[in-house]
Length: 183
Image (tube, rainbow, N blue to C red; front, side):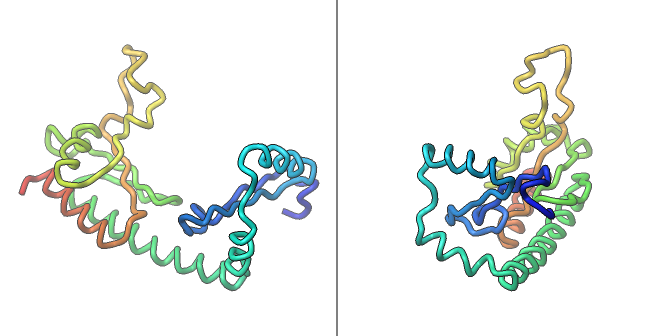
């Protein structure tokens, strides 16, 4: 972005999600001055803004050297956890295209045994083993099958997260193995 007043770009960011500082309710918007003034006006009626002590505490975290080091650490951590989940799901017979962004894997369950080869089937069985996943049909544009003539395209899919720590992912994969193949 060369000139925020001319470029047709608005950036909304914050420490909680993108920067992985849960609980730090510090966020910002970058864009044309006219738009920022309107956003600031609306925000003042909605929530009053972020507490000044939090804003001041956040400043050192935004220093280029700190931000770059944090980004590299996050990338290393997620690269490792991503591979752990990809390998684990593959060993369980779940087909996954490696994600290119975010921290979710979209898994094709069609090769799994009957009863766990649908998102809802695996979801229910996985819960019995302390594992949570999101059935693919939750992402369908036909939620609740409101158009009965069109079956859901994502019934045999599920979304898996590699956001949790590696030890949680290992426990989750072990629970999925029991859910799919038995004790």
